[in-house]
Length: 174
Image 1: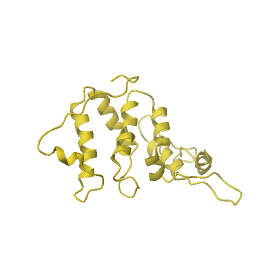
Image 2: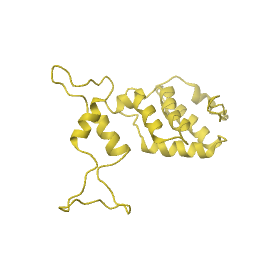
Image 3: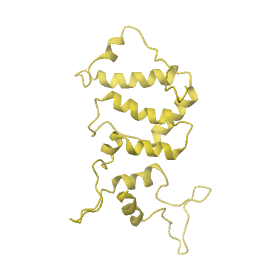
Image 4: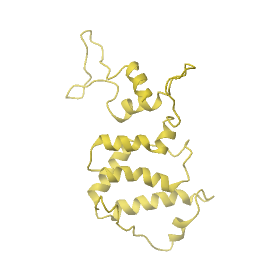
């Protein structure tokens, strides 16, 4: 794949069940789920860039989303676009991945920062969910760690947190 030309590898599939993958979204038989899975599976199994596909899959297991509870369950193209973030940035840096994921509407809906507002004149604070999840789940975690993976301790023997609530409040304003 050439980044300047886009992803031009064909998706190979065929056989008697092909009609399942061309149905309307949110069909009563659940074939919309098959369409999303079929595209991903065919790329993962047959694409010429297997290392890129495996890296993309690994990144997608870190920056996870759930179909359940969101507003985009039947919109296969949006999910494929989200996954393409990881394909595009499989060999890039994590900052670029995080930036694209942050601007993605599915993540905005999932982590409730879509239409988020900064602190305003009526004393409404911004939603801190995204800021907390980015630091806690997707990046640095709750506790500072030693090179062997054990938690660092402060002078009084307490576990050392990686961030405070003040960090969360400031990050949420962004």
